[in-house]
Image 1: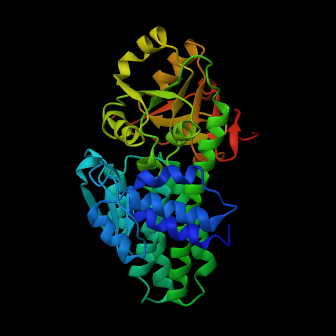
Image 2: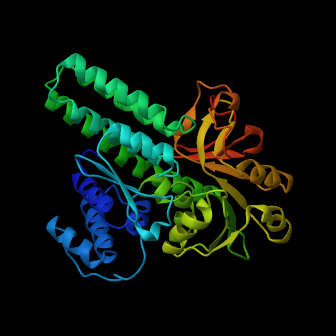
Image 3: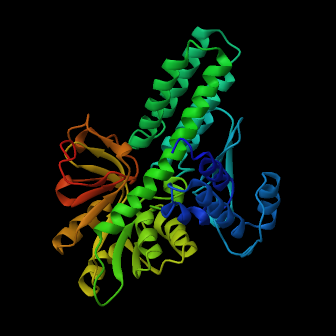
Length: 393
């Protein structure tokens, strides 16, 4: 991995180009990084628009352009050095509405407002938010720089308390900051930027591994497509490049296996209908959108092989915070003897919390459910399928 600099360069270009090339990461051959990077760059070029093609050419990436009129999504965010530009997920993603943040406080406000709907990508956004905070105080004395970083870290932690990814990203950046505070200010800033880049790159690799483990776990029926029920967005806009639950689906499809996804609307925000359905369409995954209230009908009338949830915060006993409606999906699936898999990276697991009673959640609006661990069959992570309770697993 340390010698695969060309892969990392291609991954950085992918963040600036089209997310439709993310499928390539699921089959990335790390034993041959040069050819993998070339193949990945070609996928980026093939999916670019004319405007993106000019930008790719400026970066030294060239090739024939195909499918310029095909709708596609960029990464949910782009770090520009002095700002973070986020795709505004409160709008349908094909509209391309963005929010630009120049300070950590603005990043926190955007996270709290739902500009990015949720998921492990929040760790990456929080990390780059702390890079902005460090950059803004680089000319100050050490005590002032320390105070500014701590203030930004606390502000970001409070932006989405129920999302473990935010706290995890802040904690990892704080550890690097503590190790770098005695360096020259510019060097300390460079160390933070390096750590944020590592969080983003590690996430892409981890989610690809998660997808492969999930694909291996879900067995193909002998006489029909694999049929999955998914609640909420589990694609690149929630994961940052690759996605989580949809990485499982894409791994299945990439292996030549037939798969069909039954996708709930995931109201009240409609993240399933607005975002997840568009991501599945972009990946050419057959899918059907149903109302949340039709899950019982679906399980009674159609063969469903598994239900997939996107966990945002998991406790030692397996209790899980997930998008509202997840509890109903898990309970109905259990009643129908259908396995329920939470698809998320290890970073969302907080073994310091014994159970779901410690997970912060809003009482003013329906945002998250706490799904009892007893309703979850296993967690699909980059380390494989974890059985419950999670701490010993």
